[in-house]
Length: 407
Image (cartoon, rainbow, N blue to C red; front, side, top):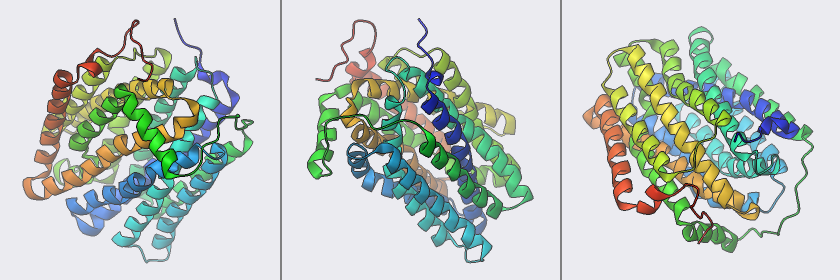
């Protein structure tokens, strides 16, 4: 039986459309930042450090962001964080306009954006179940993933053209403007915060989220597999080196390399939005293994178009895993803990690939770019096989007779 569409909700439609504009600007900015750092340094380690400065504040502030999201109006919290994210992009634009741009300035902007994201993401994901019914939730999560992946297709492709034609400054200015779309969307939705049990802003409140995850083993196992697998297979910040030194395709080709993975993810997510997958742990393991294998194969490619194909394949596999994990988490988490569980999950699903970029940069520096990508994908596959063997609870989770209530 097909679940009802989340597009029936006016507020959800507004946030989905405005979010697509803002996310497209963000993805354009990410390509521009990576390309500018490559031009300034030609160093894989410097590219890897960009990921560190993005993720460090997210990990440090994630639990605090979840606690705040469960204690305040989530819509107002997002308006504040989106404004702060626009300011970080404004810093990059101003630095280029007034000729004081440097690698430390770029890292500083990444730190600000990472800190804002630590509060923005829990508020955004915790807000979604309040805009749609429980029956519409799988559709909403599939559509959100589709929207995110579409932005990751359109953003890099547009960025590649804009970088070649107009330079990095134009990309940063567009990103600043794009944030106003989602801010306006948040201002016009009719949603009002529902009554829920009060959550204080304290260490005890943060620990409540950790205790809930610990008492719900399937959530902890899903987060752990995601973190370890993406840590080793995360290497997209090395794409500027592939574009310049391996495929010799310049900034336009770089845009397509960045767009390939989300293109596959967008197609898979669209299918999942129309036909939600079974929430089985074995499906997550299959998808994570396919992700690692596709990344490893990409690292071996000498043909640009085959490289795009395997990046797209890795994106499709990752999208399947992500939609299943998000659906299981949202269904198992009570509303008063949604912000904290999102922030705890954020440490794993963002921390894994972003810290993996640092690892990939160091390995590439000493053993080569291809070795860093291929070995990382193979280790990802090995981790998934290990999880299938040593975590039978995860492998057997799901199905009609499975009790998914927290223990």
